[in-house]
Image (tube, rainbow, N blue to C red; front, top):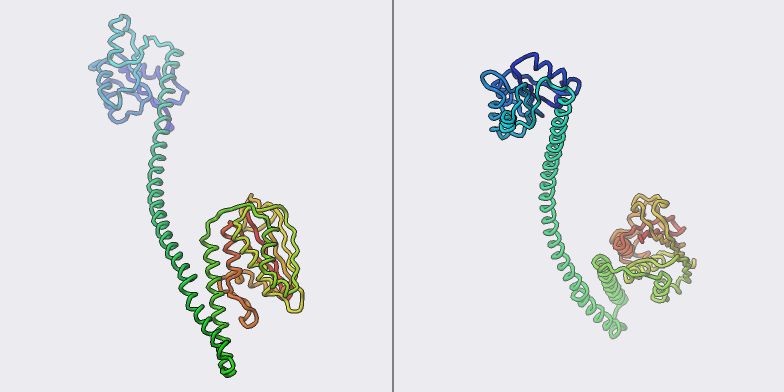
Length: 407
């Protein structure tokens, strides 16, 4: 017999009646438990309460069905188990009333009609089955609720930790703002004084200085200028990190026009030509995108080939990430792909990641001026736009930078 079979308790002092009930209800998946007296039935019910229904004979020796039913109803665990009385003598209203008063839900008069008994038993067993399923669902729901409560407690703890960490970050940002202020004012003030006094000495005492002295003063001026450039670059990098992300519709043609005007002398010196092919506007942080393009063009000027006119080609197109086959891009997102190419000195492809690091330079300071922060600022700006940048290059054949901005 299967463990999940519905159990029926049949109570009768006559074996032939117990057998008759099982024959009538056979082949319906029921599990029958027999009791030959009221006491026997109570003993069984003390050990097992998961019966769908009790079929009980009324006329039994020592303890009849009425007495047994009354004792069963006194148990909180058993009082809801339906009892059907089976008897040949319930032929008066008083007798019938006594049966219901004892706790029966129904009664049948012998000889039993098999179809009626089967139908009545099926109603109560189906009700029992539904109640069991509902109970199981309630238990599963309760278990799920407990899991949810535990997870909510964990989430609350995590949120508390996040809030604490956010407060710490806020303090760190305030400290960083204070550092930025010091960098922009206090650190630059001594440099200005050094430059001022060095320039005064060079202007007023130049004829009296030895060649070695002149060279040393020139090195002082060079070092102070480089220090100021480094501080300004660090400030720019800091602003690229901390600036509020206010996105606006940006016209790339207008940005390039502004950058060309700002770098006019540098571009003229290199006989530089900038070719553009832009498709529509993009959503970007205007100030940062101007800084990005200025750094990119300035980088191309700095690493152009001597005696060869510089050519910069900047293009944009809108494309779905699925056709780009780049694992670093988000799936099912459309991007504005901006390609920035030049015919400069290029670089070895093995350095394609190194060039975006702070203070990372592939060439000596004596060959190419700069602080080594320009492309790091570019990468930071791209990250502020939730985008991605990579680079390809070949020595003396130029470099191409690919920028992807979601839209």
